[in-house]
Image (cartoon, rainbow, N blue to C red; front, side):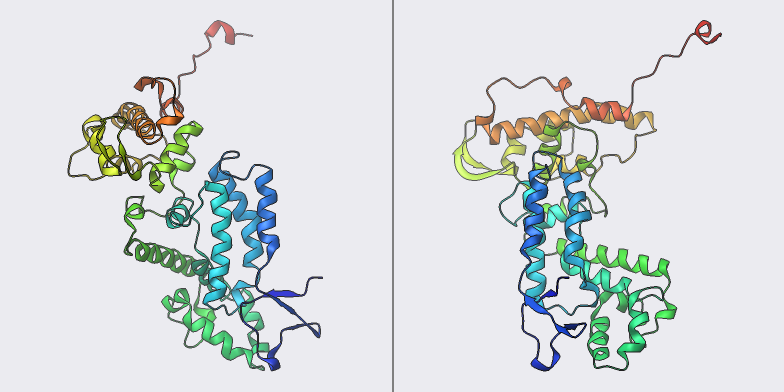
Length: 355
């Protein structure tokens, strides 16, 4: 049996954690978390193999639960949150193929993955109803000094505060539906707060609805998936001074220049007052096949053009990757078009139905 717990600080000498009368050993990090991710990466959980959505789901099911063990009843400090968040960032960097943390807020939002600090708040809130762990342990805690520590954790829990029952620790008033609503409101409010921070322009251009972004699961080729994700993350830009392969002007290959150089607003028939026409369309991708004839016609026209222009932007940003001319517009986006309006299956003739 493992008798190790993770903490960045030493406990007081008179409050050493014990299990069955045996002192627990403290560790500042668990290397097996990253080792487990490396093993999963070797079997395909990485940027260019199983796909980003499936890899993120595998991480959520097999890796993150190892970090979450005991979080709901642990009193974590800032260093604990930082090391846990860095561990999650390391796993996501392997999945999405980035070497820095600059795009982490967008990756979390695209994959509908909570930051560690928000995840701890959610787990702690889930331990409060009658059928959870905290009410079961509450009678024992009243007889020890641990109740004061737990009470402070509960009072600081923003979800529990929104339910307005923390002062009395009255868990009988909390219903599962009310708790789920409070958790959703908390996740939404934290996302809004991140959108209001500095350097959150790309995050504001993403969908504001919570949930997995359709660009991760809609039927597309792997190239189309990557181009959409790279555009969301701001990777189809280069701020170094260099000649533009499209207009041959020496400038920074910023998003504004690429959109202007390729006349994206005109090509996609988007008004000029919309600053980012590509994000404008990506934010409106349907989650179910459209039932309206007008919407099906719209996507049959706009999606091949959008896939084509993303391809052109990447050719401008990475010309060394391409050695052949670009294919025409009508050769892009076939998988999504088949999903929007699948081909009709011919009916069997009446003569074939006679037995």
